[in-house]
Image (tube, rainbow over all chains, first blue to last red; front, side):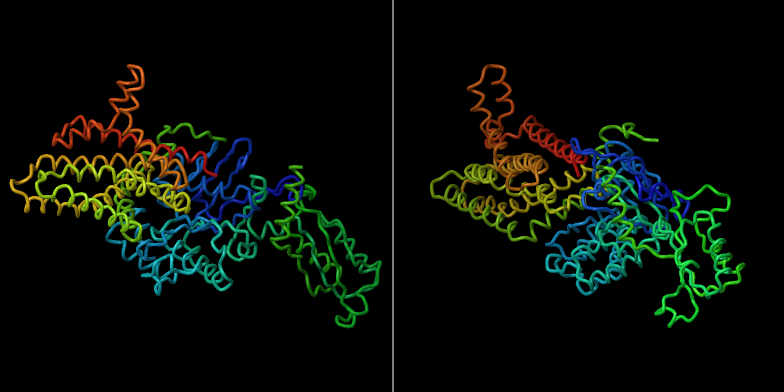
Length: 361
Length: 261
């Protein structure tokens, strides 16, 4: 069951289970120190089969270090990572066979033709000789590299280089794909193409995308993990995270006499967790401008307590829309619109960064 | 439960033995191709052939001179001194600087396999560089009367390859220790010169150190090869020292996993 604790307070951890029961990647209590700096402090999360997860965080938040420990490039000081059940520290070579990784800088060999490089990576990943040509041709096609496959990598544009890196990460058909800033430095058209490509890839494998571009994460990922100060500050599905702590609902109802409106607001106030009703019967609403457009319609703003501060009540529901609508219906008032105010990922991210900074202070 | 990953052996933890050597040949082939795809590789080959051929022509083909390739092999030995570090300096350092080491070290490939592949690739390049000089003994054979002694020529080529292997192995360690290729070049040159001058240095030291320096020194072994003597002790010396360097380079890479950010 998702549990939200202190979303805008000390830390946020929505312990949302993976999409599928099978955990493809398990990161358990990772710690990494650089001299006196505790760069990664007890990071834990799991990635389920077929999940597309975004990793967010400011520079120096510990994202890249965590990714490097996941891929076996850096060794954790404490904790462990398993990929498809294999401990990376115990058997890095076997663990990385199921892993495709695109590092942030997309390092490639500029003197090699694109196709030769992809074939080189296929050989490194032990793709059988009989399948190699087919696999290389497939990823060349998949990453739209057909026209440039014989060209030297050094002569390619940044967008094409990114695609070569992606194709090379995919050539051994990994079940887990880790992409560190996959669209960094690309022009808008290339960003769009790369996003489309990642969308296509994510249908068949577990994907972890580290990015600074929040709309990108919103578009591509079903779940997001937010890092700050070397810790996981938020982990949950996009819908849950954006809904949590953001329990404001707008209701548009038909106008009624004061007694009926009083009845309505009293019924709303009896919904567990409701803190405030604005635009109630005490003030004549709507404003003249609104009235002109909306006739006898009235808008209300219902503010609920955040989930972590909500009362422990048997009737409490994380989603009070049904109760709001029911109260209006039993009061004999027609509802024209009922919507929750959506918070952007950027707002959530900034709030988490602020609370993290306050914690550290 | 917080787990400290100490149950794996240290070797397994740093990943130096893992993965056997499946990717070694792939790395070696790419390494060789990278030398041959860039102008610098061809410049090194042309320079080497030009200088050694000139030495051969002036020493072995001069009228009245004995039909021997001794001067040629001596010249090759001196030429390897700057050329081998030039070849080895970028083996790991350049990969680390460019960031491609991250790709290699996150592939299913152990550090031992990776460093062996790198060393093998550099040795293959050395072989490509030396191979055309086989024309020279053929020329000597055709022009000289009586025919030259084959023993010193075979021993000379053998010593050239062993010397190249040792220089490249030392260079591999230097390249694994830094991300700066120039620094790797200077360090290799310094280490190789130390090996060459060990005998001279040893004479200035007290008895036990003197023995050690003489045991490690290179020149006496090269002199034996020049005489046409292929002594197994010398082969063991070159191969074991090279293997030690290779293992050390792989351990350095494994150790870097702890330092890596």
